[in-house]
Image: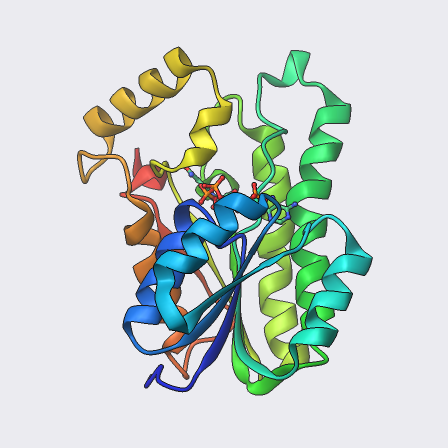
Amino acid sequence: MDWRNKHVVVMGGSSGVGEATARRLVSLGARVVITGRDADKLARVAKSLGEQGRGVVVDGADAAAVRAFFAELGAFDHLVVCLSGAEGAGAFRELDLAGLRRGFEAKFWAHLTAVQAALGTLRPDGSVTCVTAISARTAFAGAAGLAAINGALEAMIPPLALELAPLRVNAVSPGVINTPWWEKAPAAQRDAIFATSAATLPVRRVGAPEDVADAIVFVAGNGFMTGTVIECDGGARLV
Ligand SMILES: NC(=O)c1ccc[n+]([C@@H]2O[C@H](COP(=O)([O-])OP(=O)(O)OC[C@H]3O[C@@H](n4cnc5c(N)ncnc54)[C@H](OP(=O)(O)O)[C@@H]3O)[C@@H](O)[C@H]2O)c1
């Protein structure tokens, strides 16, 4: 893929995986619009992207705002959705089901809203890449809720690829990645998960946002890939 003159939207592009993806795309010559809710954070990252980057404040959970954003944006080539929810994890016996429902709203429904709203202006020879999570493709105790959210999203990738063709639709499924997402977890819990991951993963380290960004740019740029979910997990599903 020659990314020069390509116009890409990264929803959730002001931090972590989305920010790394935006940086990589800009370095390859693409024009990138990043979205997020925190205006200051978004402005800082957009500025650091240079002339090829722009930030637009959009709450991915607000369907009307998302539709208005795409209507105003006009035609573009590729969509990457990195929106995240922080709720839904925990031991199932005590799992707060209302929290899991909010987790679905913040991730599953936010992704679907973004993809549906984008279809009016997304070029038909472009692509959609959703960022899911390896919890959907392996078995971690305490992650049944996250598996449900991300599994629901991943289940839609193949039928959407068929239905929306020639638009390509894929997902990238990350394992444990060191991003600000983990700041929402208690520090001791995060440190323990990172230490265990570094000790037990086949690659012997926690992932970096750039690892996932590479996988996103690869699948979005490969014109022969659609309906796939790429695992970028350091081998987490093997242990
Ligand atoms: N980090 C991991 O270990 C890991 C593992 C598996 C899967 N994932 C998935 O990877 C994706 C990216 O996560 P990350 O780790 O990069 O998280 P992150 O560092 O917290 O970044 C999330 C980005 O999404 C934006 N965002 C979140 N909710 C939003 C909303 N409702 N509307 C608009 N923007 C919103 C955030 O900005 P604002 O807060 O300013 O809105 C930020 O730019 C997520 O789907 C996550 O579930 C992450």
